Image (cartoon, rainbow, N blue to C red; front, top):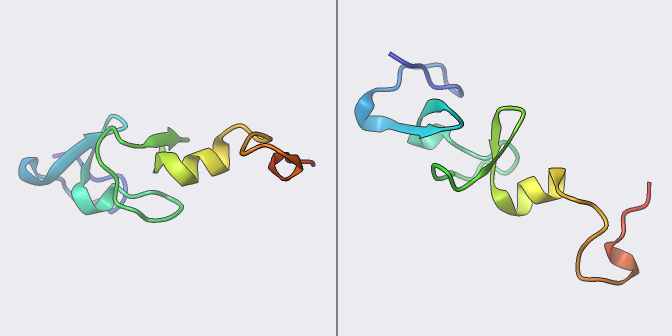
Length: 77
């Protein structure tokens, strides 16, 4: 019986959601940053962890320096 990557409990067939090559409980498949419940295939992955596509994944790992235009959209380090 597969174990859920988040809670480590067994995932039964009736309650499983498959994503990132693993079986999850529906409430356990959540964004690592904002905790929003995700749908299978409707999210992004980074280091094996799920993130919602927008805004979390794009804000954390997306390209920097692009936005609405103007000086406020650039990132200077």
